[in-house]
Length: 315
Ligand code: CDT
Image (cartoon, rainbow, N blue to C red):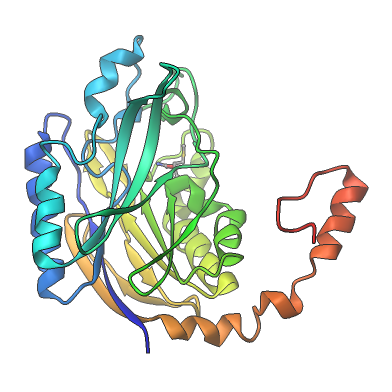
């Protein structure tokens, strides 16, 4: 049997003035706890090194540069990589990245990084679905300017061979879209790692506020079940700079059942021992894609509507 013991390291609020070394100390405490509890891998949330800064409008984007990492590891984050190698534990870390390409163009990305038990980087994922708005909207009680601060990833949802299984990543809003999971499902994913910052107030339609927790679990449990994969959903929750955010960190089995859930809104580690072969219980039966999926059907519908189907569906 193939197992991954995974730790979902929920974070409570990170204050605006909290320094990187202070935050990294919190992450290290959770990582050590995870190692003590036998984890192979510990998963941190989206933007785990800073406060959720897209809640603030600024006129000049370069004034936000200090929220982004220009190197990974850098001097403040190197201790995470060192400790992981020392403890023999992998980790997944969300952070904002500022980079410049060969043509001198600046990029600002919302990143999830997967690091192996040797402290070496395995894979980097760039958030695909960037929610919120591009410009300040003064009627909102707080902003959600991710579309100002980040560019969308165009590499889609990869799956990497790591920790003895097939691992995929997604970030926050990505979890609400069925194609996120299906793209990975088509690549044989067995564990999807997802970090999130989800304010409990949704300004465009506050009637959704009361459903935030339900929708959070609904999408991840459905994604797990319909693709026969474990899903690890990790929050940065609690009241951060006056904005209350959803916690409810979970580990979900391929059956769609929640097998571990956080009970606080603060720093909290939950752990589950995941039998990756259990994925086959679903991917070899109800969700045997090879056997039962009908790409020709999707192709026909797409043709009728004049839509180009996603790659891989046009066999
Ligand atoms: N961080 C993130 O993607 N949060 C979004 C909030 C949506 S409302 C703008 C989410 O889907 O949880």
